[in-house]
Length: 196
Image (cartoon, rainbow, N blue to C red; front, side, top):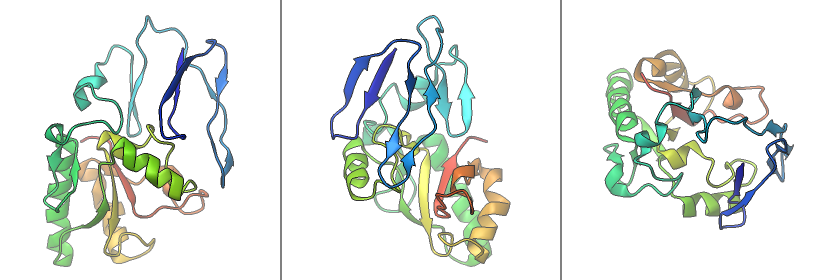
């Protein structure tokens, strides 16, 4: 089994025994629950996209052009219609449709602060905010599948946040369970594309 750790600013890959349990800790959040090493799959691993786990036979790498997390070239991404923001192309199309529907309700498109993150930006953000940022190389932002939103959506209980909760699934977006109120890492602004 291979393990990668990008917290130091470079990826270190090493071979581990198949029965070893891995865990990733965040300095200000304490140790995460251990994650068992995956069992043998004939050389293929499960692919996780948002909250969907695809079996080893699924060629999920094709969805990202075969590029690693955070190393997807701009030419493989699609713009969101907001300067500097892009996602995987199916997520970008869904986001643009959702933003149009949101504008119909509120008179303005969805406000966005973050979308695709390069590996370098993941390293930088993790160094600045380790309690909020994913370990570099593990972020759904690095797959072009996550957005951080503003304009009222960044606060629980606002009309804008409530609209997102009620309507985002129609466009394939969800607010992950870990980011919900009372889960310890409340992030009302963080939304992920899980597909339509």
